[in-house]
Length: 304
Image 1: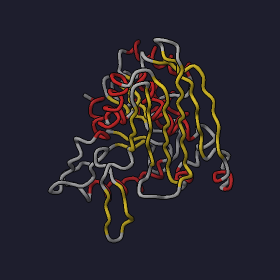
Image 2: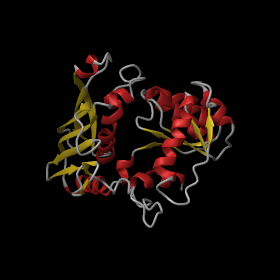
Image 3: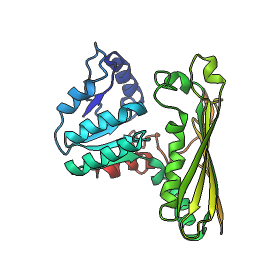
Image 4: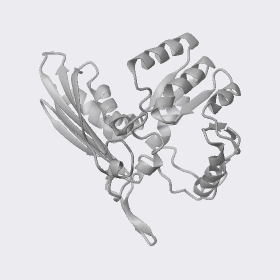
């Protein structure tokens, strides 16, 4: 097992974080792994040395800033590794095509990590929409994260990517997954809100809204989808607000992924709405027991 980043000086803190949140919480968890670059150096090309230590058939999981996905994924593919990349897998059509070609040439599996496809709420909504709701009419989707995320992502926010790539990609993937063979996007327009990030000296949008015109394939009628994402929300009972409304010609459905009917209040901790369907963090008799969570399944099924 290996872990690669850019600034090796962060690894001591990362190891402490892993020990606190994994090693000290669950029994029999081996946290050992090789890290690249060394703890004393910073190297944006450290992934090249890391990849060289793995062999064909090994698995690479890439969760890095959006603009770095392509180069790292291509290097892993050329090593003969199977590759899972967080969304968005890349940012241009040219890069998509190049990765597909390289994966076929090396006979490896390359996938985008979209865990919402394993969420039973989203999966059921998708199947209902496809089998019962008729032609696509309208969809509204919203995702947000608290404004302190701007500090977390300040190294790349507004420079190499934005909040729409980072969050809207979830519900855009849901639409593509749901409407494959039923409708196709024919026009996209984007609008934004600004102010909070600018006040922090960051030249990026606070929220981005994409309005997408969809065309139903069977009769050329039109539908409309609105996707909004933001990273300036106030801190609330969840880390990420996330919900959508979908309407077809024969039915509609609302899904609020952030609120699953389970809330927790505990001394010394803020009130929270929790979602153990995504990840069950609470141990069972000291052991990790989140294997059935769709956040785990997304990785497990790729490796399988």
